[in-house]
Image (cartoon, rainbow, N blue to C red; front, side):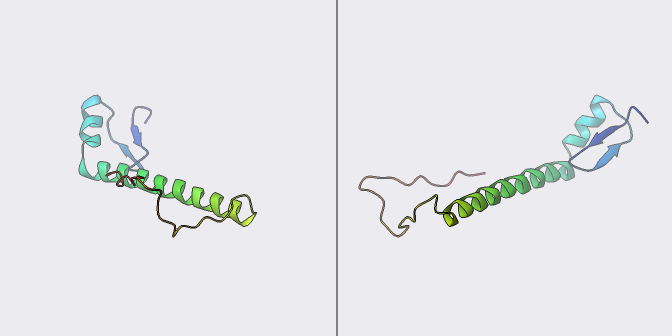
Length: 84
C-alpha cells in the first residue's frame, strides 16, 4: 500500500492517508503519549551521554576536582529548574 502513512512514534501504519486521518491520529491521546515518551527517552540519553563524557574526562584528569560543598559566591542566585 504505497499511500499508507507510517507513524514513527506509534510504530504503526494508518489505514488511510488523508489530512483528516493524520490530524485525528496526531491529536489522539496515545500518539501524544508516544511522542512525549520518545523525547523523554531522548533527553535521558543525552543527559547520560553528557554524564559519561564528563566522568571520563574527570577520570583522565582533564577536569580538576571541584569543591561542590563550597557556598556560591556572594550575591549569586541559583535559578529554579525550568518546568517541563
